[in-house]
Image (cartoon, rainbow, N blue to C red; front, side):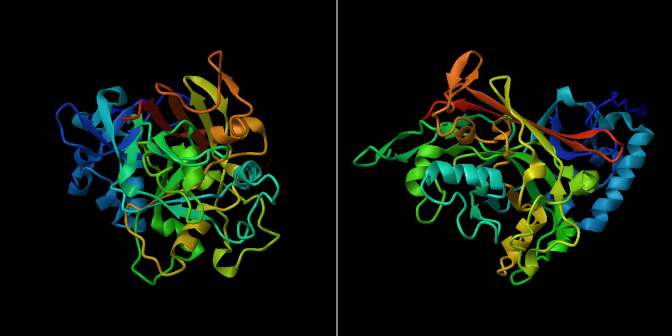
Length: 391
């Protein structure tokens, strides 16, 4: 038996305890919890077969009451001694995609981001479209191309047509971008025609991850009218390997910044708002370029889930939905390079070079932290991706 040491100021203390899927040496992937710089093998520590699965889905499907009990068990376990064979150093394990993604939807919930994009794409019109403050706008993405942090991203090819071109052409994207987001993982789903009330969010959503919705802006701009993003988004979406439990985010809850004019329709009105005080940091080739603040988001994850199911759509264990780009009111808080460089017209300096969009070989790392119950910060880890040339 050993006692796990948690370094002072670690974002992975007992008020966090994020879940992930890992493998050590030649062992099969299984569920673990991160504690400090260690991973606790839950199958070995708790002796339950559900944690020997290569995905969190079987555990998540057991439901909210079970999530609460296991969190209590793990908290008690790591406060004492843990079996020797159940503890691995983070540096010695391989981290895998933590969930079997059932469906993927991405929202557009930042008023600052939506307004900036509106000004860029529709300079002679109102930045926000008439529906934006009445419902969480979103698009249905591709679950099969969600990948874990550290997976390389191949530059996508598709049709592009610049405003000055007379006809579209085909080739690799030349305006490859990021979108710094939070993603939310559904733990227990619902059948058809059983909408999830906005205040039932915590009983259905298991946890949150960092998410990078890679975006080919030139492909997107040509294809998105009238039905929205498709190939400009579907080639890759990266998520962090650690899923921070919703139970760990209670201390991060804050009121939403707006929604008084207009007041949301009844099905979107929360009695206990789920604004979240989460700070993200975006690094481009090792240099910090932005600090997107999730606290500025207009729509909450509870409202997104309620809207996603209000028409009778089913939900499933492993459903993933993204917040959309997180941006604040200041230039240094924008969560997409499209905004940060104002469509490429205002390049920024990265490692001494003027840059607008991603080049082959570039690497982007997004990290995030939030207030924890113990008064410190809890961490989401990172979501990292490097761009490879088109094939």
